[in-house]
Image (cartoon, rainbow, N blue to C red; front, side, top):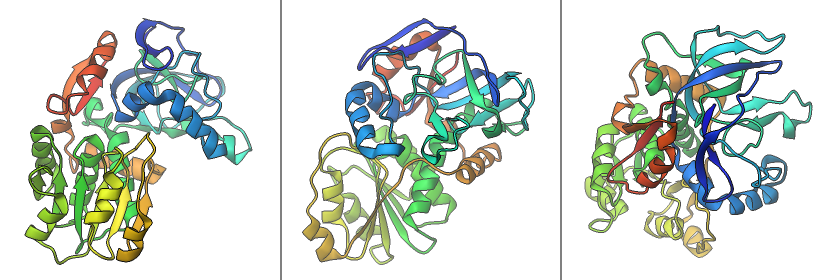
Length: 349
């Protein structure tokens, strides 16, 4: 089968690879659509650092990953069920369109080894930048009738935004500032809108992304070079308790957010910074700030996000700015470096 293959850091090629075969508890699926995630862009560039971080994280990390072996990325996918592995049953059937949390159940009794990632962090289970994948049968969710599977492929990234909002503890009657209107920031904005948080102030250098932020539910979207986001919040509200979402992930952002935050504010970090960074604890102490971090989502958040997309409570169509076949994946990685051109590119084998 054809696949976009990572062969070492910063090396993405299209090649023929063996077609996977489903084992017990697994299903074989054909990829319908797979979003290119910013974390995959990060992984291609910072693979060695991420493996090192995985070793430092211990059992929850990815220390066993071998960068000398092929890796097929892609964890934001929808797919069609083709076949079941031996002695396997599930709530879905052949021909169904499905999504899944991108992990494989290993059958291990060790809590630290019960799952293995699908996609970027696995040498064993390739992701959606390929024609076919294997998924864990118990985790596959049927896409509701009438829902475009291309839209359902965005369940994973939109669930990331929902989890970040849930982790923040924000509620109606509070305000939000979202730093960064890339796919993660836009997912955060969507989740905030569904909670009736008002106002939602977004900040991004890109005019295209500021426009998308307003489309997804922000009440104000500013260029931070012209007006800092927290100053914009003070202009449009300035009274309600505010939660600041850091969704950029570059050095200096967290320190700046702490510096700009009003006293007793909460800061939720969901942007992935892969470089060393510095914060000044005295700023947090002096303002009595609360800082939390968010990663991923839980199965309930994932399922509820799928249902929200299917019911059009979440309209993901504005986020899809391009589609490519497998042959076009390397160029799409390059194109995504320009935030004014693209938000989410789907791989449709």
